[in-house]
Length: 336
Ligand SMILES: Nc1ncnc2c1ncn2[C@@H]1O[C@H](COP(=O)(O)OP(=O)(O)OP(=O)(O)O)[C@@H](O)[C@H]1O
Ligand SMILES: [Mg+2]
Image 1 (tube, rainbow, N blue to C red):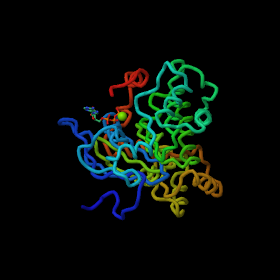
Image 2 (cartoon, helix red, strand yellow):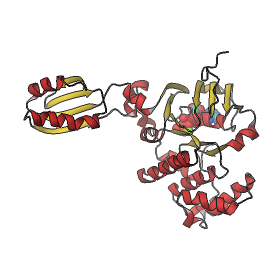
Image 3 (tube, rainbow, N blue to C red):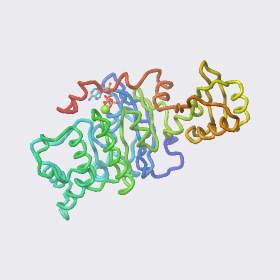
Image 4 (cartoon, helix red, strand yellow):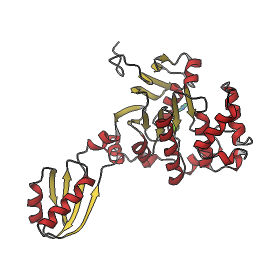
């Protein structure tokens, strides 16, 4: 059988082939194939019910598959014990013991993973990375949602896993806390060389963090690529200029190599460029100044992953972002 995700038999951190998961009549994961390179941050981006958590649970040996094949560093996930030593997980639903302190939660995890040498130091180090070292002896029930999530991330890499699975690492958190968590994830990836696969329905999270993203909807992968590739499939950036001498400036611009197309609007010009728009704005301003043409205002509009998602699925991902009840689920424990 042709191995779709791995035609050259390369060893990937994660390799998924024709994965299917049925729950009764419902196909939650519908024949997906993808592979994650060692050292990558890989995102599964999709709305509620897309099949992200189901995929993660199968990859982490928590849930059986209906058909297909999954390998972690070339080991079939059927070898549960070997796989579990290689991975760390942050589940979508919280799994901390609220009555224990931060330190005790991590100590419990250390016992499960048989960490004996330098245990105290390891716990202190991971607490430091997520900036919770001064909260070590506080009961988790006194923590904010963001602090709890940070503690779960700290716990997930205590046993030095080769791959981290993060299921909605920032769900329901405020933008500032979300940014902090992005920083920790980047640090883990860069400094500790951990391969990371995360699920999210925050487009900006996928854009900011992931080397590559698979957009998943109704259990199927509908597109995979780097955020840049996905966004550039729309063509170049758009520069909007408010200007009076439209015709005159259009003629000047048409001689420039970086222009893809120019449209006249009521207030000026809409230019589609074939390069990074941020770098072209000074050039455009300079061209206008040279020709003594006055620009009233100039603005850049870049395509986002939101545009990509809408064009691929015909809907806005925010139509299905977590509502208050989802946040409550995160706070008080979930369905699984
Ligand atoms: N244990 C289960 N039994 C039956 N159906 C399930 C079970 N777990 C998930 N499903 C269904 O499978 C589909 C995919 O669910 P999944 O939790 O994987 O989605 P998701 O992409 O993680 O969504 P969310 O963004 O809400 O976390 C949904 O229709 C869900 O209702
Ligand atoms: Mg989920």
